[in-house]
Amino acid sequence: MKQGTILNRIVMLLFLLAILLYFGGAAWRSFRDPYPTVQAYAYAVDDAVEATGYLVRQETVLSGTGGIVRLIPSEGEKVAAGSTVAVLYADEASVERSNRLEALEQEAQQMSAAIAAAGSQGDQSNQNVIDAMVELRSSVEAGDFTHLENETLSFKSAVFQQALRYGNADDLTAALDSTRREIDVLRAQAAQDMGRITVGQSGIFSGQVDGYEDILTPAALEGLSPSYLDQLEGQSVHTGADALCKLITDTTWYFICPLSEADASRLLEGGTVTARFSRDWSGEVKMTVERISAPENGRVAVTLSSTRFLSNTTLLRRQTVDLIFSSQSGIRVPTAAVRMDEAGVTGVYVQVGAKAEFKPVSVLAQGEDYYLVKPVLAVDAPEKEEKKALRPGDPVIVASQEIWDGKVVD
Image 1: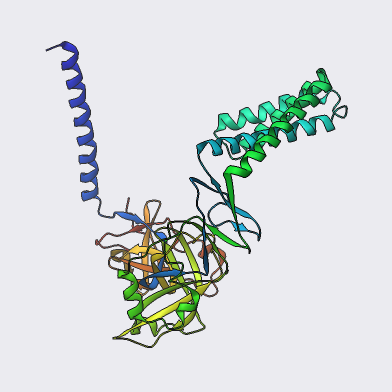
Image 2: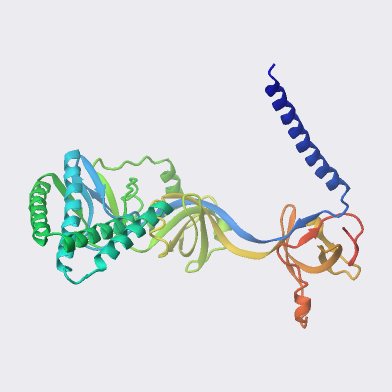
């Protein structure tokens, strides 16, 4: 066996032994420590029920045929009436011509701007090139590509202006004329092999079509029942072969779900409840209780509505949410940390320096192994007393040994 291999094994064994000794010593100290502490922290307890249902929107499916489809707006983007939302290309060559056309149009715009600014820049053209180059390089080195396209265009425009200053203006004008002629040719070709899909009204754009657009509509909510929701769960849906995208044409959206009569009795038509989404999208939405159906076998169908976060929820359909009836916020401490002092006051002992300090609390709620508490202060407590109240981050003592205010615990 080589000497280097033996040395490596010895070093690894020593390293492993050091780790075991460290954790063994920590465990021994924890067993011997009669006053272990746990950090208190801010916490909220919700009175909530889980519900699974569907999002309903007023949606119009947009269809078209083409070899290659390019969607223009982003998911959830608001589009105006008459806007182009999709471009249809016959083949890959059509896509390449379109990309070339866009590049030439930008280049022609930059050359036109450079010619128009001729003579007004003076000696500033050199500095413009340097500034644009520095800005572009800084973004690339920082990995920030959010403004890369605009920064690239600014750099090219500065280069054109500098070339015009030191070169022949006729050369740039001739280049612009040539570019415009090529643009005209490409536009004529694009008219033959490219189609567009436009919208007749404003709305929110979505690139996902799931087949529920004609099934789950606001008009279908009038006779909603738990049995109908059960049928939806097992129903197979299909999208049309030429369906490309859709437009959401109403700002109000709905969440429908079945609930037990007991849970639904805590809701009031016209009232509000908070729906917490935490799976495909994370957020809390305050929703209006639109309708509670007649009961069927101990269950009802509930319809909730909202006009907020529509752009964030365009991709959601079947979702499981928490319906939050109420919520309490406080400080979470272990059950074993809550005690009663000699005067019968409920509180916790906190390690302050080397001593235990008693801090009165009021219990708000109880969990499986914790209490949600809030600090109790005298009505006329001075500011220095308020500073002594229990706060998140305090090391709360959880020992079962005898303890009192001022006892040395370290």
